[in-house]
Structure formats: C-alpha cells, structure tokens
Image (cartoon, rainbow, N blue to C red; front, side, top):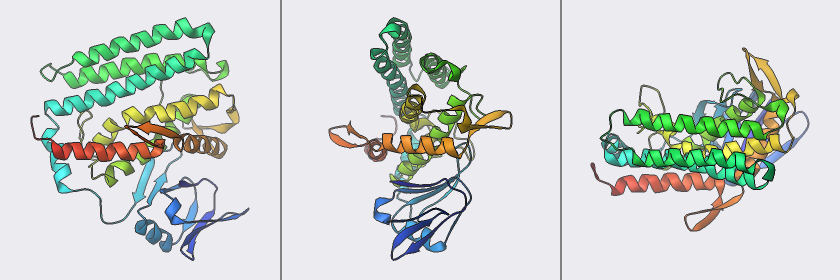
Length: 327
C-alpha cells in the first residue's frame, strides 16, 4: 500500500519499528512491511528515522506538487540497477530492436484505449454504433503503426504522430461519454483547462512515480529512452514505458465522472487553469489505489495491477540482458 499524506500539518515518525502518523484528528500506526511508497502532497513533517526505515525496507519517498508531478524522491543508496542493463539500453537505443519496443508500447497504449471504449460501448447501447466508428479508426492507426520500419525517414515522428491522432479520437470519445457539465476539448496539461484534465493530470503524476520506482528497482535507467528524446535531465525511458499504463489512470478518473462522484468544488483556479484541491485529491487517490489493488492476470500469473508494472519492468530488464546489439 501507499501512504499518501494529503492533510496539512501531518506529522510522521517511527515508534517501535512502525510508522506513526499523526494529524489533528487521529493517530495511525503502520508496519513498514505493508508499505510500498510514502507520498507527500502537502505540508508535512517527518523525522530522519522515517527516512531510515524507508531505506531499510526499500520504500520510495516521493514529494509531489499540486499537479501530482514528482518534485523529488528519496530511496536507499544501493540502486537495484546494474551497469550491464544500462549499457544494453544504450546499445539498442538506435537499433531495430528499439523500434520493436517502441511499437509495442505505443501499440499497447492504443489497444488499451480501443478495448476500453469497446467495454464502455457495451453498457451504452444507444451510443454503440457511434463508439464503434471511433474504435474502428483506432484499429486503422494500429495497422499503420505495424507497417512502420526503421528504414523510413523520421520513423519516430511518424509513430508519435499516430499516437497523437489516436489520443485525439480517444479523448474526444471519453468527453462525450461523461456528464455534459464536465465535457472537455482535448487534453490540456499544465495548467488543465477543465476539471477532467485536472483529475487526469494528477492521476498521471501518481502513475509516473509508480512506474519510475518500478524501473529503478528493476535496474533500468529512466533517462535512456528509445522514442522520446534523451535530452539532459529528461526521463526519456519513463516517458516511453509509461504509455501502456496510462489506461490505469484513465479508467480510474473516468469512473469518478461517469458515476457522478465528482463535483466542481473539487477544483481550484490556479494560474489560468484548474488544479485539484484537497477534496479532489482525496477522492482520486482513494479510487485510484483501490483500482490499482485489484487483481488482474499478467502473463500466467494473477497479481495486483500495481504489481504488474514491477513485473513487466523486471521482464523488460531481463530481456535486455538476453539481447545483443543489432538483433
């Protein structure tokens, strides 16, 4: 589980080997064996013993801003990564194998979007044919993606272009499926122009932290990417590998709107945009954590959604060790 501190002036310390969390209203004790991550989203205090206990139990400590984006993190000094894995990332970054990974991740993202829309269509018979037109177009984009080769000029731009138009179709469809007062015009990031995108941005921010943690524990370097540019201080591989998992945040956020659990009081105006306030964050975090704790099938094993990210990162890292440059 994640410890998410959202209440201002929360204080956390260690007592008898347990985390002791205090707010003005209550005290909670938690075993470090049950905690995967400590997320600080607001003004909070903690002792150095908390950081030491987190390091001992390999618990990621993340500080995030009001958009949900990680500002910084703390974990144990001994990274799980190896030089060999990072070297392999560099070796294959400009090879045909890198293209195959890129096409898989982007393809999985589009498939997830298509399949989710199909599931939504089953419960909306009056909109079934309209949604089917949208999913058919996503199938066409997947077909185009499969035909892109490394020999094509600007193949990365072509892949990103297909990813972009697919996302446009997908989010346009989601907009028309939520209650009318919350409909939106496309994705808006920072700042969000509407409440749906404010929820989505915050959900993606949490997801970024979870995927990055899984990558580091698997020995992957978040900065050595295949599709996105590996410019200075840009976590290129994180931007690549998160794509298939965005659907987790999408489904969690969409369910809140379609089930009419959201109200406009959950967003505040900030710098000509909208950000979630404490009420909105609590609603999303609770719903998202419940969603990520549900059991799915990964490969031939049943596991929680959150654990499937870690399992894939280990699988990907191991595949790098089995590959030679140019394969």
